[in-house]
Length: 224
Image 1 (cartoon, helix red, strand yellow):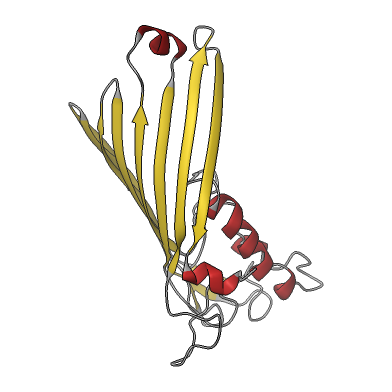
Image 2 (tube, helix red, strand yellow):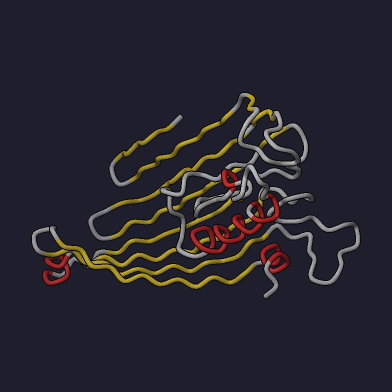
């Protein structure tokens, strides 16, 4: 289900989906091509104020995680990587982390890449996130002629599920050991971009930067 509504300067849009059914193939864990019952849920919603000069947006997202890939239920699948959220946390850090978690450790002769379908490839995976953003377009004559736009955002994310076997994020026992945590917080990312459009809209130039501060859930998996 999806929606897009605008009323004056206010708007909302979003998309929600659920994947169900069963599969006998493509799930090489705990054994090759085990039967699994799918219950995968994800969604994104945006709410905001838009004007010629200033946009204020609040984006909320969810991609269901799986606390046990060994059981008969499959609950985790990344949102499509073409849907970009931030620059570092999902696009780089969790892309690499999911490839390391489901790649070599689950590789076999028939699946040399491991559980490739579990890689996030940069999409949102096993997470809930909050992403407020601001877009500013100065209305001075010279900045309007250049199509200048400044965009800033703060991305905050939490793991949806902490699991045990073959999980992206582990839940520690009643008493946590060194480097372990019960926290689900993945981290805080600051994003900033400056963009300009010129040559009658045929050319575009953008400079983007980001900074990610690891949360405890991410630190426990990637201590270095």
